[in-house]
Amino acid sequence: MDFGTFLWTTFAAFLTLATFSFLYKDNPFYKFAEHLVVGTSAGYFIIILWHNGLVQKLAYNSLEDGTWYLLWLDSSKPLYLIPAFLGILMWTRFSSKYAWISRWPMAMYIGIGAGVAVPLEMKARVNEQLFAMLRPIDWANFFGHDGMTLFERVVDIGSGMSQIIVFGGAIAALVYFFFSKAHTGVVGGVAKFGIWILMIGFGASFGFTVMARISLFINRIQYMDDVWINAAFDSTNENYHAGFQVMFWLIALLVVGYTIKEIVEHLSNKSKPDAAA
Amino acid sequence: MNIFDKFMSLDRRWVFLFLIIVCVIAHRMDYEVPILVEPEVQSIYDRIESLEPGEIVFIPLDYDPGSMAELHPMAYAIIEQCWRKDLKVIITALSQNGPGLADQALREIADSVKLDRTYNGVFFEGREIVNGIDYCFLGYKPYPSMVILAMGQDFRIPFPLDYYGTPVDSIPMMQGVKNYDDIACAINISATNSTDYWISYGQARFNFPLAVGITGVSVAQYYPYLGSGQLFGLMGGMLGAAEYEELADNPGPAKKGMKVQLPAHMVIIGFVLLGNIGFFMSKRRKKRDSNVGGN
Image 1: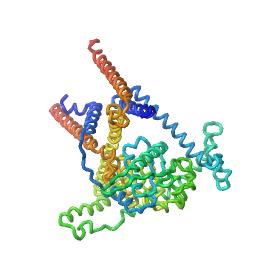
Image 2: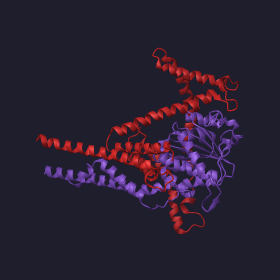
Image 3: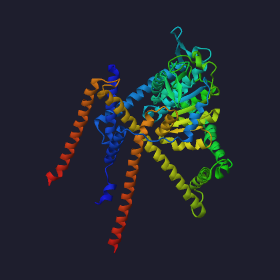
């Protein structure tokens, strides 16, 4: 294994521990990891934006002769000058005197964004969902299909019922958000059913969120154990390197040292009121 | 303070510690949990299986390192399945911190495809994956909605060059490939709201078959699009990835991770139950105490 891989693998393990140390409490190691993420993300983004955005759209380096061509001088791309100019105008925001100029590109961006978004969002999120709600009920889902056993037919009623539940649930949830009539009587009952439907939806989201957060932790365990610790202690591993063991014990020493410091601080804080008494 | 009050005032760090211990032990233990495949994941697998060699699958990988735990296994399983079947793949990375991650994934999958392997009883001879012939990685461009709309006209409008700086016009597999009309289907693997853009600005505008692989956090909000037929498939979080690995007979980190998910969820359910029991018992005791005090 080359030294670069060794260094970065160990550094990633250290950053993982530094990040998880926040679960105990805020500390300098976590702060270091946090600031590093913010800094590298911003730096990486700027470079990606420069090479994949500005350079590609406004100029490119020909592979054939190695010359840089400015695309706006290419007869097929003269219109690229307009967004490039509007983009430059955005920078006037840094001047209090000329900041008003940035409203022009901003107005254009918002106008185009809204104009494009409204019909498409309406189609995708409202119309298509409405059409799905208005599909005729497939009664075969209630009574099963040819060739099904009695048990399968009984189970299949569930798939038919789901159509009714989705339809009824959508109406009830909409009624809950209808505030022009007091939620009493029948309307109140339907609205209450709507709340239950919403709560079930939130519950499903919560369950999936738990799974997502645990997944992130599992990924880190897999990295720490399968990649880092394995490379340090398993001599049959293709990435085995004795240097990993040194780094492992150094990091372990750091963790133990920090833990002892915390325990000592905790105990001394605990003994203070007694001493005063 | 009785035991129920203790449940209510339990320091959350004890919960974290307990969860960490359970997860590490589960990871170290050698066992498997059964993976039951849902129809919405099966439909993605079936769609890819039904394609003929040479057809193009478009896979936007719109995620960054923060979500790789859930989404990387999906990308690995799907792209490897495509290449084993001699399908061609177009890839974009519309999340600003994602292009490097996508590039790394492509290289690792290409290395894996070099090996002879058997999936679901079918033998596949290893082969070299060539950039520009087997895949085209277009990279990143800002403002996903505009990029998605522009690709509907021509991939070359937002991406005159690919991620590696090669003009798209000179890439062999992109000859005759203009826009979404030339792809068999798109499978968006995303951790951001770019999935919304793919549904609204991509599928709704250009009407191509779209499936999504998304993080667990956002799964619930995309099921309505599956029911309405706007999506032909949906993979949710690590579970979705594990289901796909199971289907593709290509076990990876997601399937391995499910053996940790199971006990971790049990611990969380246990703490939720304890917390609720503590809450109701404390409430009941306070009510009883106030009744006694009143008398």
